[in-house]
Length: 336
Ligand code: HSE
Image (cartoon, rainbow, N blue to C red; front, side, top):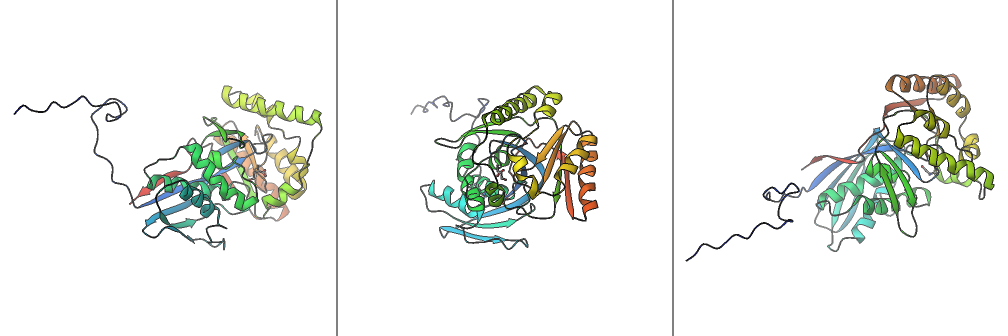
């Protein structure tokens, strides 16, 4: 009997470098994800620009279970809803479950490292962390774009609007531009600019719904022109590493003036941080956090100290975060 001829491996059987196939990895039954804070708007880019931070982050653990559906537990003190339809991670996971043909069930444990209502993407982190964890349990069958689309259902629970400017950087990392949400999601993920971020989080809450309610429903064309000139300038500045252009473009003529009264100390905090050497900044997302971008770590610490000094003088508790822009978004840190 002749020996059967082994056909050459097809492209799909070989690894990306053409190497021999590896045995399939066993699928984990439980994964833990760190899902980072993010800065939405980045000054002039209301609802379209976002940056990923390295910290703080939520910890989301998903475990497969036999019974279809979700159970959610919060291992923190924020008293957030655990009904999947009213929980940001739950709403995102329900969207994912609708997209898979097989009946699946997950136990979800969330430990919030990002305080809700802080303006640094707390709801986006939990929603993004949940779908990234589920995707890992499913052999990474969904793309970043599909995961962003699912996680946006979490944002709708939190603020009534399926916006992606926190979700996109929380999943892709770096710097993201949401060119369109409708009719088709169009997200441009760009490399993280080599800048350092200083964030002050004064310990009071601004609800995104309320911060959106104060916004104008129409804007004069002259202001719109200045605003989109800055959006273009900021994106160009990030891509060409032009810090002077970034500094000139970090100005929001439309949204920040409308929200400034919700954030006492905003003007002084920005002024002192600029004097300390920051390139520029503004309200992070819908506030109350304030971010400043900086050319290096030392300047970021000086800017953070300046931001904090304003709230210390006002007798308002605050947290400071200093770190580089993160190149990676929500990531699996352990599998079992
Ligand atoms: N772009 C949104 C807003 C972000 O400013 O309302 C909310 O975090």
